[in-house]
Amino acid sequence: MRTKQLLKYLRIDRWPTVWCPGCGNGIILKAFLEAVDQLKLKKERVAVISGIGCSSRATGYLDFNTMHTLHGRAIAFATGVRLARPEFKVVVMGGDGDIVSIGGNHFIHACRRNLDMTVIVFNNMIYGMTGGQYSPTTPEESVASTAPYGHIEKPFDIVELALSAGATFVARATVFHYNLLVRYIKEALQHKGIAVVDAVTNCHTYYGRYNGMPEPYQMMEYFKKNSVTLEQAKKMNEEELEDKIIIGIFRKEEKPCYTDLYKTVSEKAGR
Image 1 (cartoon, rainbow, N blue to C red):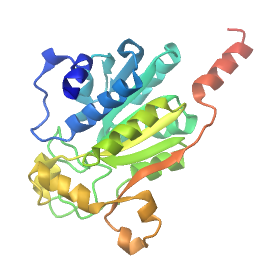
Image 2: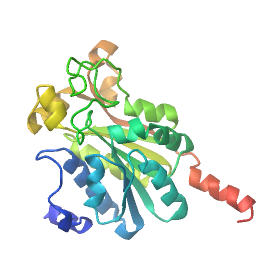
Image 3: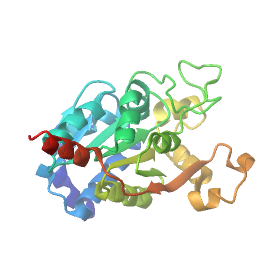
């Protein structure tokens, strides 16, 4: 019954989705819809912008004001929407490659400026749409199509990146922790300023298959086994935290956001 209530937010005529059976992208999408529904947001006042990639296809299935834009440029487009339509709730959806690789520059400056928008990163630790190449978040020693002998680069920690760039709301959950994901997205949508949610998800088709977890349930078990809360992590040493996924709200603070500051400058200029 609850799921049927969420169908009003979807373009059913665009189904079936391009996502593989068992893909975690659908879990993140539903968590977002749950958050929107709980907050009773008017969908005509919500804008969702995405770039290119598996997860970025989400905007095609959402019945909001949506834009499917260029690879890595979702935040740039979203910035324009936010400034032009300040009454809108602006959300960016994209994968780890789209957001922190080709779109990395936009991401860090959106955090620095404290732009009033929500960024949901579908972090599956690999490029899923284009054949399983390693991404900026692929763990060291993992196998990918472009790292058949093991990945040698140190990955980005999206949470640490967002914190160091100045984001005022930063949280992480996995698709296994669905209720937490709903809660964090809900809080992110209510936050005034830049809100980043690192949603760790499964790409069993590529990441999982290359790394001994070819079935969706195997990756879910991996998330369950290797996730620790922020409170637990504070009591663990570096060795104990190795390969662990730390989940929780890492920052939640109020600071002047860019849109308000921009309005002040416009008023000074007499516009």
